[in-house]
Figure 1: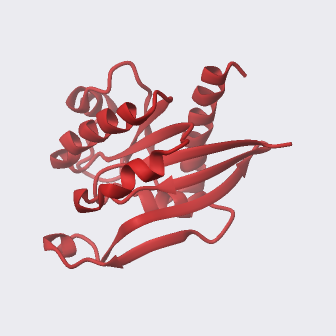
Figure 2: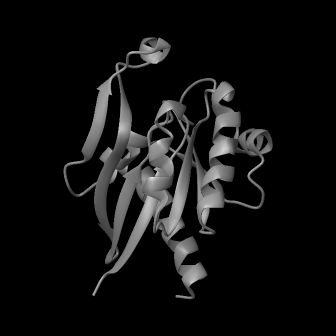
Length: 175
């Protein structure tokens, strides 16, 4: 029998959550993307309003990936999605320092829902203007937590992040 994991993928607006799940999911991603009607529409055309859902099997382990909406106006979904989570990943756009305080707030919020392992994945590290992992860590101050690079559109990069969160969850479970 496969081990099941519920992993929340969260992060500020436009950090790459939908792309992250889409890059690796074995099934068609269930998404609730809608046209943006706020001032953010100049950044991208659509945003997640409820959740993204994907599923992937890695090394015989089945991960249910639940992506949260990034805009605070949809924050009512965050606690609902966090129910029964085994761990969470906070995606942070390393080219958008303005979003770093939001990422820090999400770490505090999701850590408060349940004491589960988590890590920070710095997205867009392949783009000009990306801050270093050390600078990102300093700016969001996640404590003694893994901070790793991730290109959310590359399956191999996403896989490395997921293998790391599985390892953290398994160590917590004692397995």
